[in-house]
Image (cartoon, rainbow, N blue to C red; front, top):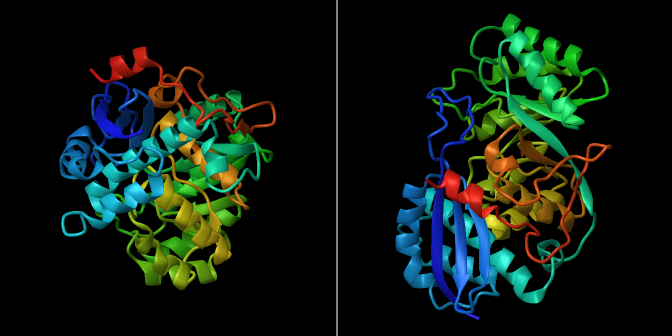
Length: 371
């Protein structure tokens, strides 16, 4: 079975806030659905967290290397794409495009072999995992309502991120975390994402360590992106002295970019995003490197239900896995697949055991969001 064609659909109309300095609107396109179609009509689905314009440009570069290739060798084919675009890619938007293709190829591989991706990645260690509801900080009254809604949807763990946290003063940061803890109570886990990859991030180590001590007082599970992603030395120092676990990695592409984090033990947790870092193949390699360095792996997943499905399959195939990220609420998470993921009574998600990613696209929703 050979790869015959690719189909791209940029998602817009349901884009949620990003918390960025230049805030997103519902019509902004930052996610692209990638479909790889075989000469026998079988379709694999993937997702890239970048605009369809950039994915389309990447695919124009990659297409001659992809068309006619085998549809059942995702790791080899995606590595071929990576190796042969070294001078024009080496990460960034080209790697984002490869990510969407790679996920779709794994979905195809599963459909061809009639196996879930988790089994093809080496074996199934678990059939369910805890999602954390991922949402943005807000003013205290609005924050309370967001948190109540997330708890009502069944989330037993919630991550809060970005503005206004870290954008005003220490009193505001403390008020936001206190509001969150008082709203959800002691039985819901809280994670905090400062968003240090935002434009013109103003804070360094001193702010981060002071804030980490404040977060420890509220029993926060981890402190994410407290520093800009390239400040490896800062992360090393922060991890050494922080009372709460430190994590980063969502913006990095290619497994090689993660090596310094492992080699220098710069983090307690690493967070690759399979819709950006190189697909399931690279995310699998990064997750195993984390395991071998005794560093926890938690996938970053501020994207789509397709990205969540890919994260679930990888979580099923890793010896140690504790959480997956679940952007909530989001039309691309809740409407893009025929059977949306929902936490069970214990706050866990079942990992699909159907062939491939185990999901079916809602074609009506894809058409609606694809314009």
